[in-house]
Length: 271
Ligand code: MG
Ligand code: MG
Image (cartoon, rainbow, N blue to C red; front, side, top):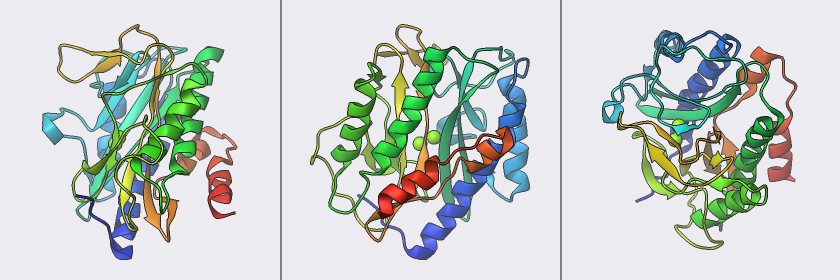
């Protein structure tokens, strides 16, 4: 059952989302060769607690840490460890925070130093597909419209769309109805309702869409060991249009990147 949120609840969810956005922004300059994912995890936990929030993933389904840290061929749900990141790696960081009883949950794939051009392309296309998908999250549309848009955009680039893991509704629990697959058919699935909040999160592989899991019971990686990217935003349906609750602007500020992607997204939604 989809649980729509009131305007007041959506503002609280924006607060939770922004704590995650700021956490990712704080981490961005720390992501360089030599740092371990466990060190980054500690920084994130402290930062979240300093903002009067609670790490959203720590202990959730018994996950052992505050961040899911998935380098290179890992898709999602990687566990932080002592292995230093190295030049040319990519690292997908998924972060959750709970404040006022509501979850924020979003993700960004970072470059460690200089990455290969074909890897950079995978990151760019995956992030673009996130906005392409979010634009379909609007009144009158259904779950399949978002999935179709993401699938079409990324498959047209020759990439594989992970099937087993999907986006989701978000609220007082981390995973609410509806499931939001990154693949689908136009006009199929549950209809969107005003006030609902979702996490839209394409998980896109450079090669095969197939995945495998490590014996740790958590880590998902690509079946062909080629890289995978993951970008996630939290979005509310307000006045029939998608409103971003999360932002990557803190990441871009930290890294001195000039990005207009969120402004361009809003321009397309409100034109
Ligand atoms: Mg997430
Ligand atoms: Mg999520």
